[in-house]
Image 1 (cartoon, rainbow, N blue to C red):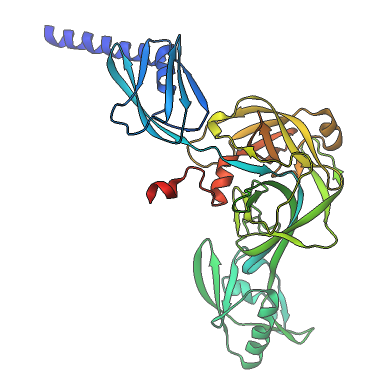
Image 2: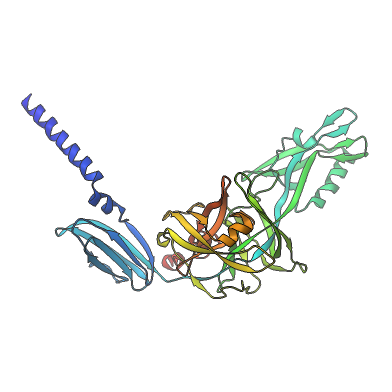
Length: 430
């Protein structure tokens, strides 16, 4: 019995000790030092340490890509050259933690800010609604009867690929004349589904109908974020383009971007997001193609170098761990095609380890921009965010109840979506 009591007392003591340790400031600082660090050459990272921890490079490391400093209450990591290494943290000479450090070369891009027009061609034809065919036996929608839903993409009819709306009509009329049902292949949430559709004759027009509203393209405006002068790959918008009727992301077959001119601004207010009103440039010459429409924006390749007229030079990018709360700037167009610089504040930023679209909260502080737009407006998405001479991300969404504020996406995730390997993973694998 006495031994049981002693065990319980010891157990309670240990439990309390662990709880006290977990809430102590030194412990919190210790766990904030990540197990894996990625940093650029020349970059320095510093962590608080109230406890006397020392740090040294692992003697087994083949390269010394960084230097380490342990000063009063701080541990500093400073990238010297590209490479990988391991740092061992010691407490009273006893190893307590290993930090794997990857130092990568600095990466430079040209910041955007230009207003662009976007033209997307869908993969097949997109179903955006049903309509009732007025037949001799009443009103029916053949497409709905066949189980085709809004948001489905028709990719094949009778074994032939469908690329545009005009491809559909000949099959419909031929089926109506012969009485043979159409063999239709649709894509729904990345799944291929087969169905049979029987067109019905409209008694008013004496033609056959499938009872579906379809569309094969979409258009809109946005803002260029960056382009890579080496590969000519670019990123824009910072968010996915969804169909205005189905509200679902558009699956892109191809597309183009063109220059656009801002004609006016619908100013935003609480509960009502504002909007840039713009038109495509007169010549409508494509300045680049679109190969990808993702949650992080649209991506493709530029045909030629483009300039924003405000800062036409390469800037280094910042990893999410480098972004700090405080002043920053955005490049965007609010009138004509002139790119201007405006003051914003990074309210918060998350040093993300994995791709995510909402990594920052920003607030417009520039009086001129607030007077012109009321804050963040539709069409401003993709405007590059610059902090301390580095491209840190892009504007993405506005807060409906506070148009002066909104979300931003970190630039490293947009580069990743563009197919740009800033971490040199391919080289490491080979």
